[in-house]
Image 1: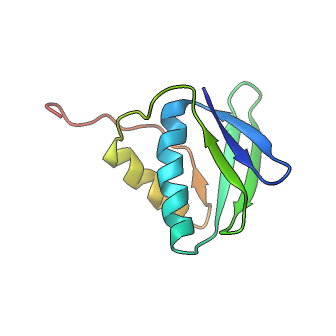
Image 2: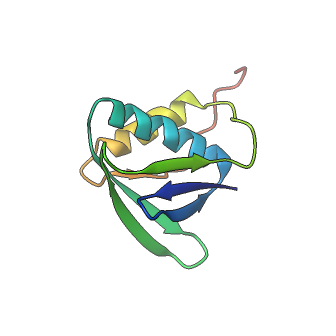
Length: 101
């Protein structure tokens, strides 16, 4: 379980390392282009939803408990699509890779 640390002072959002790795790639790509985005996190245990605004001046830190996982490019594209939608970035289910990959 990793943590996305947001803001200063930081607030931590616990996320699975695999999810966090994919989110990091999407978020850093947007920020590299000087684009801001909304990011919604849902606590599955309570269904509590939080949404934060991330901009190039936002303090962020990605903390992992395990090595960087293999990246699923299909999932990455789906996450990019949500980040570019009016609803903003949110975690969607990971699609399975085609057989033989």
